Length: 220
Image 1: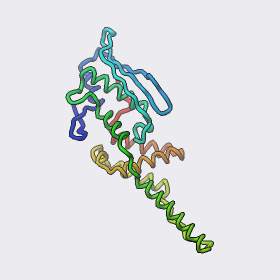
Image 2: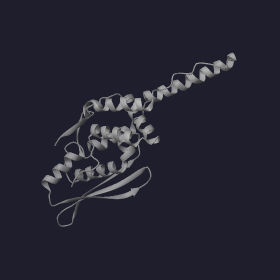
Image 3: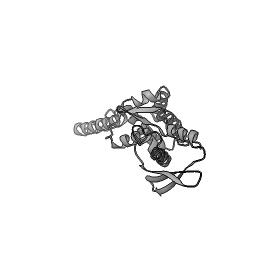
Image 4: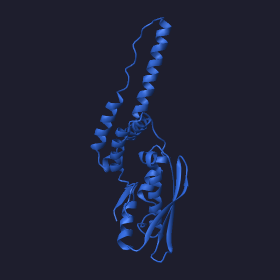
């Protein structure tokens, strides 16, 4: 089975485990159920059942809404995928190095890492500081007019630049991209969602799903 190297260790994806299961256990079923569902978290249980109705393995997963593109907009779907991966691992598929799947580990790492300030956040903070400084200076000098700081680029321009950059990436180059660049795209997604730019947001998310290679809908 294909693997992904994460910090020097090989991890199998859920997709690979599922293909192995479907090819070798055609009479078995893989079913999922929602155990808990809140506004910002979910717990899902997956079970492998043989052709006699006997449960052969189970797997539980819990996901919370995070700043990563995957969980922020599809935490329930990702939770189901993680539960399926753990059930398949407990069944004995793809556990040469670890039961944890590549997707599960990547999401866990993204939640544990302390996010750095993105370029967008730094630019906004710098613009605000410059504006405050200019206002204070104008008040101190008794001036009625002063030069406003240069505003940030329009949302449409930032969207087009980010979409162009994403389309130029491969899953490998995206994983190697700087944290600030990825955070810039994440902040853009949040702004698009806040302003109701659903079409633009869908285009960005489509590219992010392609680059992360995590399938929300896995055929049975």
